[in-house]
Amino acid sequence: MSIQTIHVRTNPEYDVTIGPGLLAECGPRLKEAVPLCHMAVVTESNVAPLYLETVKNSLLEAGYKVSTYVFPAGEGSKNFHTLSNILEFLAEEQLTRTGCVAALGGGVTGDMVGLAAALYLRGVKYVQLPTTLLAAVDSSVGGKTAIDLSAGKNLAGAFLQPAAVICDTDCLKTLPRHVFADGAAEALKTAVLSDERLFAKMEGGLRDSMLEEIVAHCVAYKAGVVERDEKEQGERKLLNLGHTIGHAIEKCSGFTIPHGHAVAAGLAIMTRATENLGWLTDGAKQTWEADRIESAVESLGLPSSTEYPPEALAKAALSDKKRAGNNITIVVPSKIGHCELKTIPVIQLQSVIEAGWALE
Ligand code: GLY
Image 1 (cartoon, rainbow, N blue to C red):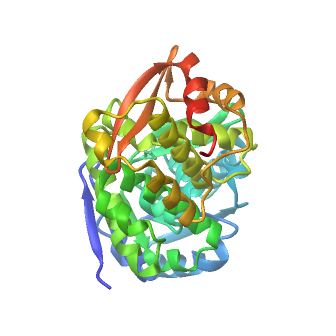
Image 2 (tube, rainbow, N blue to C red):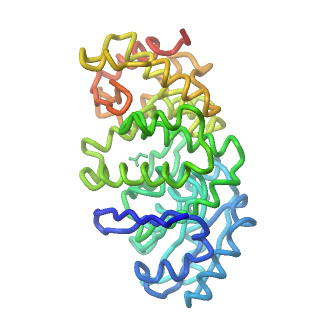
Image 3 (cartoon, rainbow, N blue to C red):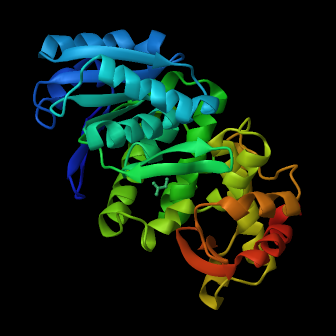
């Protein structure tokens, strides 16, 4: 299998390298973006037994000084308490401004370790070593870092681009089914946003042989969006397709429903709402196939509905960070491969959710 490199022209610029077997080569591969230094590798308890030793050995062999820290796995760890522990660890290990932090793991790890890097000494370099499909296709690229607050998902964070992303696609082939499905939701979101052909490929499910191509497509699309709108002033908001309702579902569940599963249900609800509210443009009406999105969600092992009622979801979305005053911008899937932003009064959100909530 070939190794692909996608360059992201943000500030700083960086490469995303995608291919099999890359964790065992991460030391030499990082040397250009991160000259030899003290590397603090932070990961979680599910990932550590699988990959920490491999990463540590590769970094040591390349000449890095290495410290490691492992926190308990799960969205429940994405909070101030764990963030504080990571910061204390970096200080105890005496990481200086020439050091670097490596986030080894999925979305929780990448988001929280990125935030630790943004805060520690007012900012040190960090690199992303994604090990889940969700992190590979979405969260490891683009520099969004965050932790959750009890009021909602990702409410405290910063923008900080990584110095490099190394995505070992072998990690994606051994993921538990529900963790894989979680990432498939973000990949499907990208297909609905950007490419009908990618969508068509994913409709019948996601095979291992498709992974490199799908990750590369999603990263290339996201890189373009982030280059044009690094701080989410406009176009980047499109990447939130399914996320306003998805985040509300996560919050209503006390963060027990995983992110991708919640986003999939959010995508399906927005799809039905778009049709039922007559928001399709005339041109889009001819190519619109709402059933295809719903079927694709289900064929990837993801939910297309939620038990939480529209009123509870709308209330949960009041603290969504995409809200601006009394308005909120939602993403409308106007056809497969093209979506639009629509700003609505926040009090209208419940009726939008109601319009797409029930399965037809
Ligand atoms: N996950 C959406 C974004 O990075 O903007």
